[in-house]
Length: 586
Image 1 (cartoon, rainbow, N blue to C red):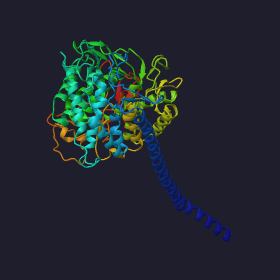
Image 2 (tube, rainbow, N blue to C red; image 1 turned 90 degrees about the horizontal axis):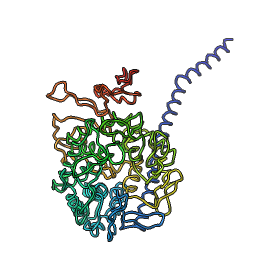
Image 3 (spheres, rainbow, N blue to C red; image 1 turned 120 degrees about the vertical axis):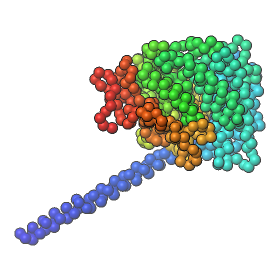
Image 4 (tube, rainbow, N blue to C red; image 1 turned 180 degrees about the vertical axis):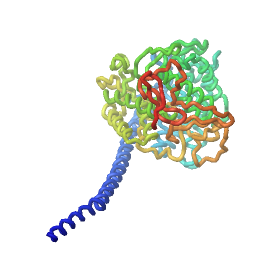
């Protein structure tokens, strides 16, 4: 018996030792192995996907250079070209030039992408060609907004990248040629602002200025989304006219807002009267909101923040319905059109910049759900009927969903967003890749293709997808992206008063104690909190992602409508009575 008990005790002892010591060691070892495997897997996946996107870019770029350069854009199915600069925004194709042979639009749009991909040799070659051959002294009527974001933005951004601390050129090769081209183009824009209101004409002839009997109709985006490129041009050249013209137009436009802080879609530049009162966050208005917050980041002016904050809260109050954003009458706030437009997919990226991560994620997932339904994102989707708009079934290789995916991954580091990016890459290769490049989709329900590879596919779509999987090219400096995906660095010298949250650690600058602080989710990864203003005891700065209870007519449907409390960053809940209140727990 004693021998059996001893044996039994020994077995039990061995089991206890195994459970208490050896098993945990194995478990920890396995856990560490799993973590290591997970990291290695994600690292390998990012490398594989970045290589795949690189191949996409060069398939599009090389075919453009072979079959379309120096014309504006590639027609990939017929391996030919289109001089499309004068057609952008020109839906009726009116007043097209007779002797215009292109401005190498896609090459200019590709410059910053070449730098991000690390191809300095091709970047230098492109800059030399543009320096020697590109001219804007052409008899071509162009859309001011499109030319500003594509050509002027492309040149200004590329100039900055060409003159940063990294030597990308053979010594003596670059002498500010891109900036000279940008300044020449900017001067050709200025006659468009010679109106009774200061709001610019939507169309201008690059050689002769505003043409006789030119239309006076323009969009909110068209006259309210010029400040980044023209402001940067003034800072680089010392010529204040560009920034002044864009800022004056922006002030005039903001002064035309309704009592609800909403703006319409189209207006008259001579009378300053609205033509279309229905508004939203999509086509015709989208980049207006984007440029307010990005101008605040880039130039540090408090007025940009105040305008954006008021506009953002109005959007949340009158356009948002759960995870979606419909359109509404700027005068009454009443819903007009219940529809998703593909351009709205930029909105989650803007929300990331101001820290409204939860709302950004919810809306982003709805857009991705529609993407998965069709394989790409239709231009217009009727929310009330859950069908594609019968006349706007196309997908022109737009970047907005990839853009928001990139921003959300940067803010959260959630690998799910890489899965979204992988799905987008696979869809583009499956449905739009042809032998001569990447073609637009004419009908998302049949995947019938259209013979057009837009320049923004190289400037934005490929760029955001590449940065999603490899953001190392932008490490070491803060950038904002224009609405066309051209990076502009946040430079302390461009700020009269730079918000602390945008000052990188390696900068040396004098902190102004009275400067208001607005945290950025991209750098701080927190919701912007109310901060007491020095010298004004008890005064608070409203957080942009906070939905106030002070509006007696404000109602919430779900907790997601209530956002984040601005004083302590706690989630807010929707009461049974339909009002937002603070949760007891974070």
